[in-house]
Structures are given as structure tokens and as C-alpha cells.
Amino acid sequence: MYTARVEEWFAAAHFLVNFHGKCENLHGHNYKVRVTVKGTELDEGGMLCDFGILKSALKDVFKELDHCNLNDVPFFSDGNPSAERIAEYIFIEMEKRLDIEPAALSLVEVFETEKHVASYSRQ
Image 1 (spheres, one colour):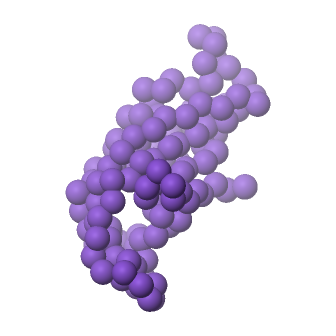
Image 2: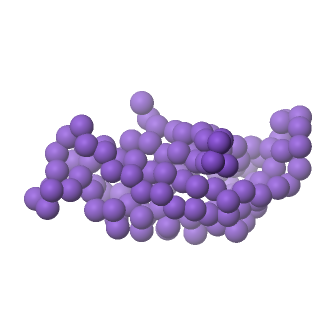
């Protein structure tokens, strides 16, 4: 199995409903996001997937998230844009933008800090 991964950043604010702590208050993060694809075959150029394609799709997703209050994004209408749900949202949006067969989107990781990360995959 081959994997390829890109990493990018965006900045946004959010607050968590029903958290019962300081994260119930509006605050911000500089989120680091890693997107991983996997597959068993390489293309004729010896690559699983062009990094530029992944990076472009991720930057397109960030247009909805960067420098905003994530609570205002309709996907998070329940008021809980947690790192786990941000990873799910990015995964869903990346799937819509990628046509990379035979590779497949495998994992999205969202880092709130270097020590705190949540991820989403379909497995």
C-alpha cells in the first residue's frame, strides 16, 4: 500500500456548546491539517497522486474555513465545530473535489496545537 500526504494551515475561531470549560468561549486556532490518500497502484509517472492536486483541493476547502467563525459554517449548525467534526467536514469536502483513482482519500488529521490532534476516516 502506498500513501501520500499534504499539510496546510488555516486560521479560524470557534466555540463549543455543552463543553463546560473555557472552550465554550469564542477563541481561535491556527489549525494544521494533514490529508492522506492511499492506493495500491502508481501512475505511469511513478506517483500515487500529484501533491499539487491534493494541495489545490485542500486550499479550495479552506476558502470556507479560513479566518471565519466556524460556528457560522452550516455544517456546524449544532454549535460544535470540534477538531473531530472539522476533520469530518474536510474529508467530505475533499471527496467532492478529488478524482484520483485508483488512489482514495484515507485520512484527515486536524491539529489544534502540535500536541492535540483529531482525525476522521471512513474505515
